[in-house]
Amino acid sequence: MNDTLHISLEAHLVDVLRPLPPIVPVELAESLTPYLVSVRPTTIPYSVLHTVSKWSRTTHGLEKLCTHSPPLEPSQYSMISLLAGTTTSPERKFGTYTPAKEPREMEAERRREKKAITTLLNAMFSIGGSGFATWWAADKTGWKNEWKVLLSLFVAVVVAVSETVLYIIWQSRRSSSKLRSIRPELSSSKHKKDDGDTYSLEPISTQVLSHNDPGLRRR
Image (cartoon, rainbow, N blue to C red; front, side):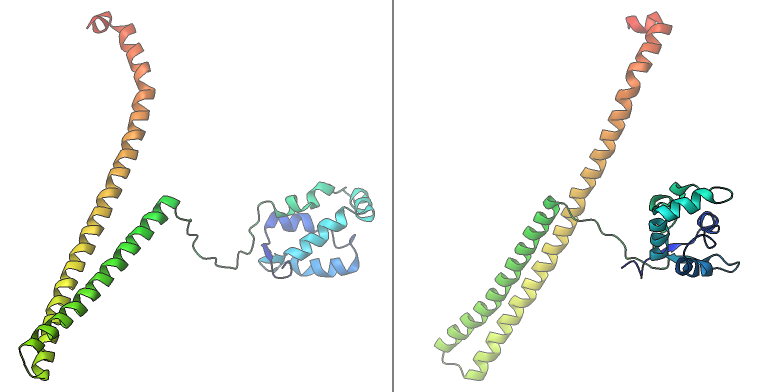
């Protein structure tokens, strides 16, 4: 994971790392050099900074830092100090965070889904039942099969259209009721905020008026 994780190479981080190549081990110096040149990349691997931090806590590293001219502060090379003011994985584009819904909201959505499913099932049963009832009634009249089929289909289509219209009306009413339920919550939260502000200011205004004008206090 650390091999693929990059940190933004800020100017202050470069200033901290620049004195290290002459005093760190050769492998670490070779890892640091590409990031300390005049034209340097915009990011540095997290693993390189982690190696620098580990080296600064060793006996050899502490000795090199303290004997450097001028002496270098070992605390500057802790991971907290190295990562301060930087950005993790600036080259990546993360998705938008969507907060989890509240349990009350999730329960309300489940109830609406169950009600919608029930409504659709009732509509399907109504269409099928009306078509079958029409076929059964037409069979008693002795009509030919093609006429019975046509009549059954006609009745089923009429019922389907009426059920569709009723479902659209139900959906529109549900949407409007949902909007009406949201608006009072927003207005109530606004009133609560206003009430809180008024309550905090009222004692001060009352004291000022009563102190400056006794006539107002008697009224």
